Length: 348
Ligand code: 1CP
Image 1 (cartoon, rainbow, N blue to C red):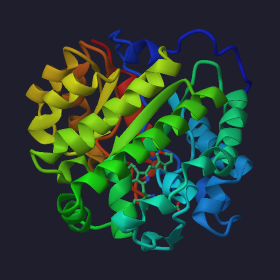
Image 2 (cartoon, helix red, strand yellow):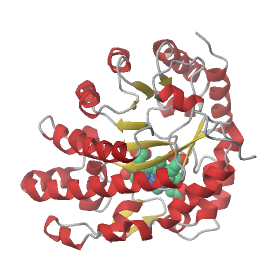
Image 3 (spheres, rainbow, N blue to C red):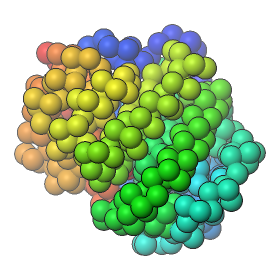
Image 4 (cartoon, protein in one colour):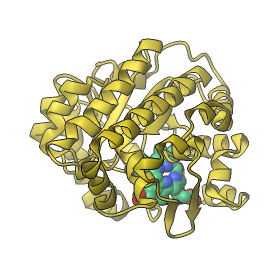
């Protein structure tokens, strides 16, 4: 791939700013990863998953692989949301077939976290971004990302994935003042990391609040929406023109208030978001996503119908084609090719 001029706004950037496009731009959450044989081959060259993320050559190559294969409109830098706790001094390990493992953080040990380490610890991520930007075609955007404070806190406090985030909900309700301090520390760390990714060459950002749906009605505004408001404020203060996508997974009927409070440039729709809700939020911001990743695994009629329904619902306004959550490792590559072809052949 030849590096080209990337000073012109890409199709993806124009749509995030509110233009409608048919066909829409397309990329996939977790588009680099285990469903690609070339990723599995590259990954076997590195011992641990985080070592892989901190190797600029490998991380950059993994970012470019799905772009070469499918020509997506945006690349997302190959990294992980858990680099933030790792950088703050709470080491993260990934166990094969098990997932992330951390020594659980107690809320009375917050002073052990050290935001002063972020920029040095994460320097390899920024190096990977600069290399990737140079190698990408000019019409392909490069997305930087981070986890939202609530989602990061769930891994830091439980030390692992849990189905309903009960350990973190209990800890937060038991000691809300200390939990607020953790959320604020994370919001400021995330804002710093996102700004550094823009400085290194990213032209759009996504904030993943993958576990937003586990918060109750009282705590959702405080620990999901308000924490993200703080991040968006900091990032826009430094980089007013870089579009920000926020993905509050399973926010349910709180999505409308979330969008009004956070005012992102775009909002990611998980696959449970109804057409009515999706269209209502699309009146004020660009929407992205909504396709159940299992339709992409199944393929055939289930996939074609799912794609058609989403294009029909959202193509009149600003819309980015994507899944309602990350692509799963068992996804057949042929189904991804068919999906890209169907989306690119569509027009209003
Ligand atoms: O060895 C491997 O290949 C491990 C699998 C893997 C991959 C490919 C992990 C471990 N992380 C990643 C990369 C990753 N993670 C990206 C890369 C860029 C791309 O999208 O192509 C991104 C954006 C993420 C973001 C991420 N990591 C999220 C938010 C999105 C989501 O899926 O909700 C979360 C929650 C994580 C934590 C994480 N990292 C890895 C795993 C298996 C998990 C999830 C564990 C869980 O289910 O809680």
